[in-house]
Length: 613
Image (tube, rainbow, N blue to C red; front, side, top):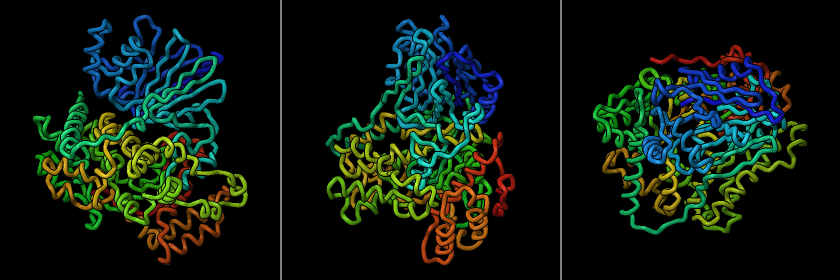
């Protein structure tokens, strides 16, 4: 796990060494163990390393013997051992046991076509001096981030936007991205909240040389064809693939463990881990002092079942003091408050390990959220014509609809965004999924948008904030392909979410864990917005500094807060989103910061919070 950064200049101009150093320093949390840099006229590739594999021999960049190919990577190639053996047989032996050297040798043999051979999570930069070209690559579903800024002469790239900012790009809000954020509660890719910065889309590579830029999609989840098989056959393949995905992700030269909430996903991963390890799995959980939000008894139950070495700490549910820190590490606003407890459990695990396995991705693959049950047992939209279904599901996943956004905007922003259409973000995805059943169509949208735009940002950014690598067995590409060969009716059936998945793992984790009610990993911020945090929300959202941005109509914001406080409406998610935007603006637009701010640095009196006990 690392962070990468660099640039390609079409005119051969070079960035100063001090600028490259600043870019690397800005993401030191992603790789505190080592810094590597290859720079020549017009191009540079840099790497901050969190040493996981081949501690002594894994320094990046890796350079071919003839000096013509240079590679840096953020992530892990989990099948590197098998690939290295194959490469040695074909005359491309590796001199280290590091997966990034495997990438170099594989590229020497196969060129960019090598990507289909990789089982991993990665963002890769490859300088091919023979072609005078730079390739930038992102993994299949976007577990690892990779941001771009291209001004027509120079293309900058980095694992985090803050590295691009240190290179001197303009700090300006992209209002189109804001429009999409208010619909989806996160900024959907390829947009970012920064004008001129884009996210390389998952499953895509980009090639830049002096003549231009080419992008290609190298993996397409929608290409899977549904299969009709017995439940027993599906269960056997599911269990085999999950077991093998976990096995591969145990390859590690440093201490590792797992997040364990006691839910079906983390329990299944830990159960599979325990089959492959002689020593107890190290597991980590946080609990809340407030019993109604506390999942820790379920985590303890799973830990006892698998004999793990379990660490749990109770924390106060009010952890909003972490919001500015989370915003800093995310680079963008997110309305999802569960980033904060994710940071806490990552912080806990990082005291002992460098790597954790998580259950992320399973809900989007196998219909784990209650929202699927609610939508598909609702008003019949699921069996309607395509246009009706698409409109209904778009409304289901929208935060502010078009009418609400138009009312919320200031006059100037309303004029600017009058023709903007957030449905255009999902329209191509609906087209790609047209041959799927309705349930899989919904899941496909959430895989491409919600997962990569929000839910995978949590473990990556909150883990990397404390130099912790998160590995996601459910997002092994073989598991993703299996999920979209599986009919939707085997995922959501008779009101049961994860229908077949739960049947597959009940023997491993037990019925009580497999079928317990899903509990979201979050805190009751909506209740606080009505009482103890009402002054905070008003002070932030109606402050002169906030209103001077001329984004939103203050009367509409005031009414939204008043209705929520009175209990006549539940605007929790809307208030969270507006707070997220303003915290982001104060963090990144108002000042060129080099470290995470606290509330005082943002000109705010933050809410009082209890420390970890």
